[in-house]
Structures are given as structure tokens and as C-alpha cells.
Image 1 (spheres, rainbow, N blue to C red):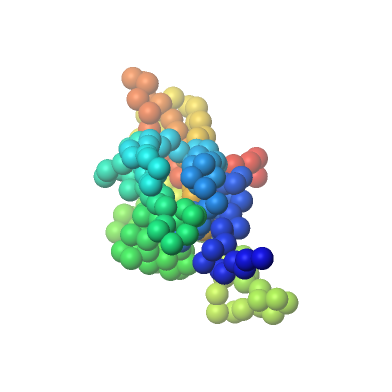
Image 2: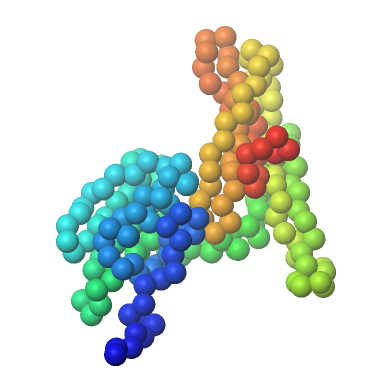
Length: 207
């Protein structure tokens, strides 16, 4: 009988795509890794293309890769083990430049305060929940719930649009997921104008 070490064991990754791809994930074979990447992108509503694929590696990236999107995944077969590792390049680079997910959420209130200070008339409604650690209230922190904002230029422009607002949503991917909602209007020439924005947990009637 043989024994498996932690290095030899595939990661416990749900192929439904509900988990975040992370550096160092291991898969039993190439097909399992490809399925995980596919399902992950289906969940986040993103299109990607394969740029390199052979028996030793599998590389794909966002179809709009460049200035608009830096998302990419590299899967490579290790020398020592018959498993596959995933490098989530975007998450690693973003954390290095902007900080991790928690740090980014910590900066939200400061960011919106800056918007209101430098763009007078900006409307912001940032909502949070109390933060409980077990049954104890942590008075030093709060939990992000949702936020709505609109710029004064958008409010003014809507006065010249058709009196109809559509709502479109885009899934956010990452540690905390969520949905970005946009209120959209049309002017007399049928040009699309975003007039309001919101980040919510999911796209539903309450949101």
C-alpha cells in the first residue's frame, strides 16, 4: 500500500465553479482542470479564449485581454507529480498593486468620500451591516452590504433622455463575488447612457 502526502493530493475544488481559482490548486488530470476553468467562467459570465494547449500546459485569457481585462489562467503539469496546478495571474498581480480583497473593501468609504469631495454633487448611498464575531459585536468594523452611486453629469444628462430606465447587471468575480448593476437610459439618437451604478449581493427585486 502507498501513502499520499499533501503535495500528492488534488485540491478539493468544486467543479461547479463556485470557488475562486487560486495559485497552487492541483487537479487530478488535464481534463478536470479545463472543466474547472470553463465552469468558473460560465459562472462569472465571461468569455475567454485558449491561447496555448498541449499535453504539458493549458493557457487561456479573457477575450478582451489588454487594457480592459487582465484575467488569465495558466495550468501546467508538474514534474514531480501527475497533477495540474493553476496560476491565477490576475488575482496575484492585482493583490500586489492594489492590496488583497479585504483591503480593497476597506477603502470603499474613503473612495466614495473622495468622489464626493472632488466631484461635487455625486450621490452615494453606502450601506453596511454590524460585524459579529461569533455572538460578540465588533465595534471596530462593519460588513459591506451594498452601495449606490451616480455622478452629477449623469443626473443632468438624464434630463435630456427618454423617460425610460433599463437595469443591466454583471457578475463580479473574486473572493466576495456580488453583482454590478447599472441604470441605463437612451437619448434622442438612441445612444446608450449609464446614469446610475450599484454593487449588490445579487440581482433581485430588492436590489
